[in-house]
Length: 146
Image (cartoon, rainbow, N blue to C red; front, side):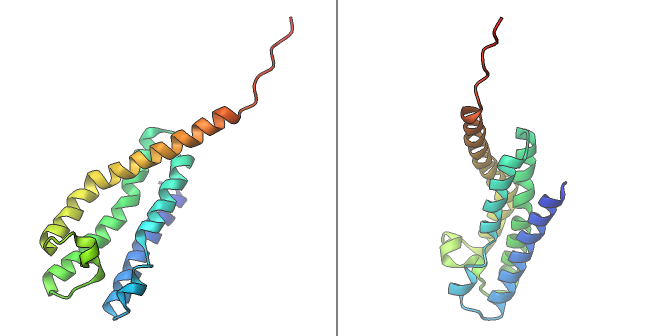
């Protein structure tokens, strides 16, 4: 794992902790919502879509970008589940009206399956556009004179 990936993992986890602390401290949810792990993940998948050289590396990067998000989400939702104290992590706009137990389980399962796979697909699309653009902009070889 390279330094850049470690930085993204740390940043995603740190943003999640900051988000939880702000919410638990009573900062209004209208402000807390701007402390976004998703924004850092998007920056990461855009970067790694271009910076990685293989599909396998992009798939690994997708999982590594989602892992800290999933851990923070599951911990925060478990806190809500155990204490009954509502947090932004289980706000109505993020929970689709399901119970906190189902929401927690959904993040645990989704964080290991469809969430990183969705990020991988997005990374592949960005990579394809980037690689295609580079191919189109490559100077044409001059025909050799015999």
